[in-house]
Length: 386
Image (cartoon, rainbow, N blue to C red; front, side):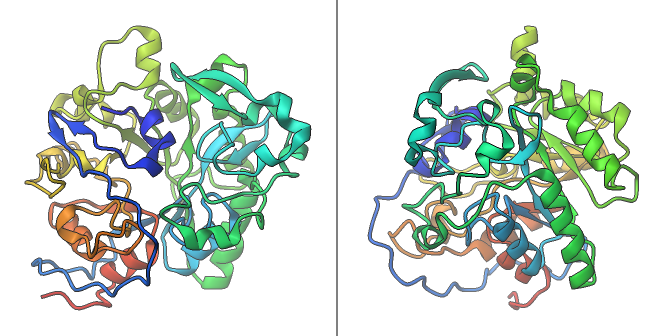
C-alpha cells in the first residue's frame, strides 16, 4: 500500500493499489482530452442543503489552476469554499511557503533554470529516496525567481495554460489573501494549513511548528474563534502544537498499513490502522478535534474500482467527538469510482456529485476537494437530488 509520501508524489499516475487486500480503481488508458460532458444528478437519497458540510479547497481550486498558487486559493474562495488549504514547507532562510512537497521539480520550472542545476540532489524523504530540488536548499528570494506549473498535466491539460504565471506563495501571503477575500466576499475565508513532513524538517534544524505558531499568533489567528484548522499526518507534532495553539487540530490518516513517519523514527510499531480503531480514535480526541482520513478508508472500493459498503470509521470517530473530513475528491474520471465515470477518457469529468452524495450519506462532515464549486453546489442543493 502506498504511504502518504509515495502516493502523493506519484498521484498523477493513479496506479492500482490495495486496501486490506482490496484493489483500488485501475488507471485508465491515456486519451486525447475531449470536451467535458455534463454530469447527471446522483440517484442517492440525501439532502445536500447542509450549511454544516465543510468544503475545503484542496490546495485551492487545484482542478482549475496550478495547485498552491494564490490564483488557485482565490478561485476556491470565490467558488464558495469555506477553507483554503496550503501545504507548508520551509525555505533555507526559514520562511514558510506553500508547496505540495519539499521537492519542487514537479510543481515549478526549476529544471529550466541552469543556475540551479547543481542543486539537484537525491535525499531520503520520510525514508524514501527522492531526486529533485528541495525548498530547504533555496532562499525565498531564489524561490521567487521560479514559476509554478501544473503537477498532473496529462489529466489537467487546461491548467497548463497557466504554467509560468504564478510564483510560489509564502504562508503570510496566503493569510493576507484570506483576509482580503473575507472582506470582499462578506464572509470569513478560513485557512486549513498542513505541516508537511515535520520530522524531516526537524531533522534538518528547520522545524515548521514554531514558524506556524508565530505566523498564526502574529495575524490574530491563534484563538478558539479563529476559522483555522491545523493538520498533520504525524502525531508527535500535533501533540506538541496542542500546547501552543488554540485552534482545532486534525489528525490526517493514510492507508491502514502505512505508519506516521514519527512513529517509524521512534520505533513505535503502530500504523494508521491502529489509530482508526475505537481506542485509537479516543486517543486522537485527546489532542485533535477531527480526522482527515483517506476516503478509501471511509468507503473502500472493490477490485473493479466500485464503491463498497462504508466502514465504521465515521461512526466510531463521531462517538469520540471527532469531525471527519476525508480527502481527496476530484472530478476527473481518473479519480472517481468506476460507477461514476462518464467515458474512457481519464481527463473527462465524472459524476463527482454522486460520489459526494454517497459519502455524505455515510456521515462525513466535510471534504477536501480539488473542485470546490462542485462540492458547494452539492451542499447548497443547486442541483436537485432525487
